[in-house]
Image (cartoon, rainbow, N blue to C red; front, side):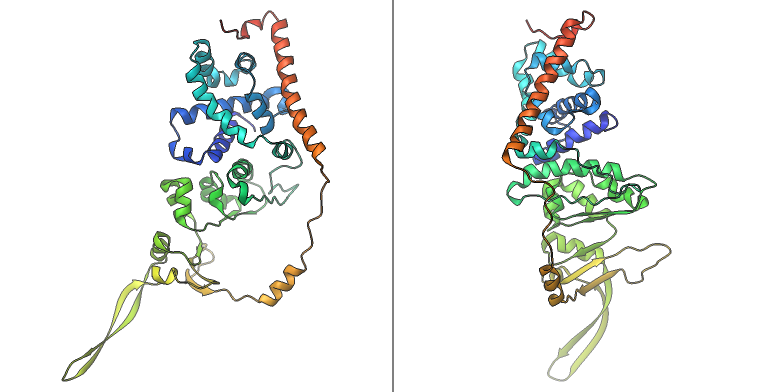
Length: 376
């Protein structure tokens, strides 16, 4: 993180990821207050000893400190003074209910990811997210757990948002972002879709249905995402999604033949009518392996037939042979419960030592002792 705005985005991402209903309530007092509080915690740890303890586990533990000590040490960082001032004021005015209403939302939400296993994963510093770094290109593969999709999804969203900010720059290698089950993430993907192409970034989003995207992102954001992508490929879908794709592909002139029979004669008339190239009913009845969609082109590489309705022909025997030849991913390191528990306890000790050292520093310096909060 380079400045406090990065901390704001990180706080917003993790809280919206853990409380998906907040996405549609951004701007409300009881949504923005927890975000500001979490931002203050994150940025304080980022500035303390050059970010030595700037990890989500340390953030969670620091949030649990009693208010006297917590607000005291947060006040030492001038950049977050404007963020914590409302909380300090409420605390000094003995407005405990208001304060708890503001802070408890953040504390309770973040407590969901408080576990020894997650603490171990989130406290490491094994690699960076700059996948298109010309000097150190890399592949980052992250997977969710269907049984813990909301908790892990919020953490993955945080990593993803940071990655999107880091890679969308000039003079980097070309790279590809592939998201399967994209609605499980809470990300600011729109800027990457709209500007990433100029920075050699291709983005592929996999969703089950457009309604799924609207449910998790809200109608406005979902419509923007669906409308700004240049290429779309769809298998069997129905309802509004099928109608939207059909309208996107457009209409073509189609031959129509009508047969009229009466007692005296039979007549056949032929005409051309402008009708949907791929009607919604056709899209909703596609077979496995059939796809419809639209592709975009470049000025130097024109595509005359942008719309398509095709079937992918696979060599299933060759695919099975390839799958059978897969090797197990090698174990990077062997972990046991003792190592994980030791890391969990160490993080708690880190925060306690931070508090003790800072409080001692403030109390022992007459020039700083006025910053210590002591509620009457």
